[in-house]
Length: 114
Length: 114
Image (cartoon, rainbow over all chains, first blue to last red; front, side, top):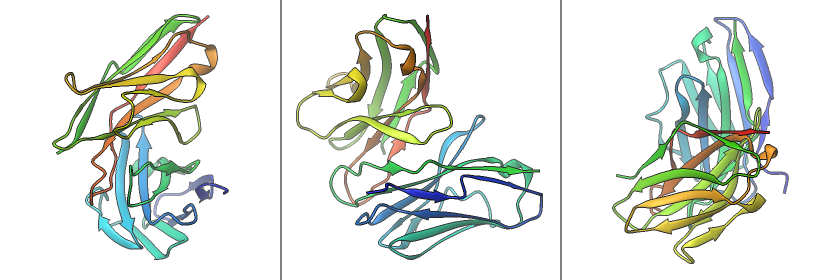
């Protein structure tokens, strides 16, 4: 298996622009997680899905952030409009919803908002 | 509710010395526990996990961790540090129940001096 795939790996955009991050989970995994990592705040869980349904979005910072999972093999995290404080590394992870819940992480998307 | 405390945000050891990274957890049910490693500019990678089998768990790259219920600890050790062990290490806990989130600690940055 190719593991969790994220695109793009790097994104540089200007304040006010829309940003869309993409994630393909491991085939067969039915839970998907979006995290944000910064020096100041560390690793934060933004939202997670079970069987394509959002279960907990309490970590989403504000209404500018939205996430979707239209099918079992694809999810997006959108920021509109983007702000410089959104600059961070965004990780996607997937797991099975049963068993130990071991999560497998993607390589991340490094977002820079100028 | 589950929580994880990692003592020491920065740990420095000499090459060849013992590595000890501390993790204490809080859980109202028997936990599943994990150690993840993050190398610079990469995603999180599973080092090892405890899932209620053997209390001494061996992982990749010579690391191991011991689950001690009486101390609510899951410290990570390696007998002899190598320069390539320099990375950030995260302890995490999951209940393994219906809420399949992982609760991560704040991370410990390990530096290995020559």
